[in-house]
Length: 275
Ligand SMILES: Nc1ncnc2c1ncn2[C@@H]1O[C@H](COP(=O)(O)OP(=O)(O)OP(=O)(O)O)[C@@H](O)[C@H]1O
Image (tube, rainbow, N blue to C red):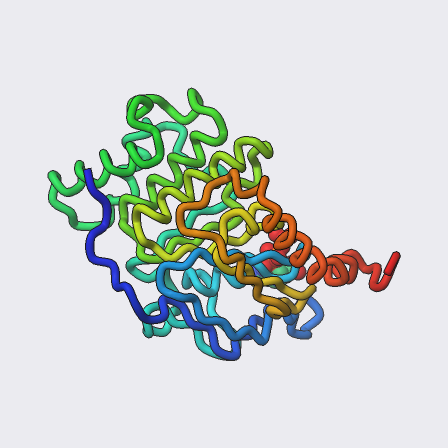
């Protein structure tokens, strides 16, 4: 049982240059949600973004996913401008449990392949691989209601994985889960990241989650969100959730909090309080 085989090992999977997002405001004024943002993801890296509530994290992910269009600047995936739809090779997993309750686990996962013209044998290979990778093989015939929240989220990840994305976008995928389950789901994601070779872009409000999972962490300012710091964690590729016991983990989370504290207070309308 094997996963994707032919991933490019060099180049820039995602590039954002001078990107701003301005929504139409209710009073006729534009609502500057994001930017300007300049960012280049590295091939095969795990990049996380943290930032205060409402700073534009989901907006940033939607721009990369092709679900929204930049007002200014350019967003590219593997050198091609992104607009209008999710590019082939990109998979997205959202926060909410998006499994289909009327389908079994295996049918939920197969759903991700529906629009792709794939021969039955290859389909089955990918489904078996994703079931095994996400630890769902013995639950293949179960319905989502028979699974825990963590397992349902694994179904959603598996549904994305069968499309063999080269870039996986995760928007607070563990937000609804308890702390222990989140740490263990983090291990699952690190495992799939190693096994697929995909580039991962994760949005999270949890500093410990970002610190545990990512190679690099972008810290965003309060709205309009800009990148005010990029922290390199320096973890080895075979890390897992035990990294939280490491002294260096405390150093990374402390640096993130230092960068974020003032910005978080601004987003709560309380600049400088308790400085
Ligand atoms: N379609 C839209 N039209 C108008 N305003 C929007 C739209 N989508 C988002 N916004 C606004 O843009 C800002 C950024 O929203 P976004 O959801 O990207 O922030 P976030 O950092 O992901 O927030 P949170 O951490 O609370 O989930 C918010 O003020 C939000 O209300």
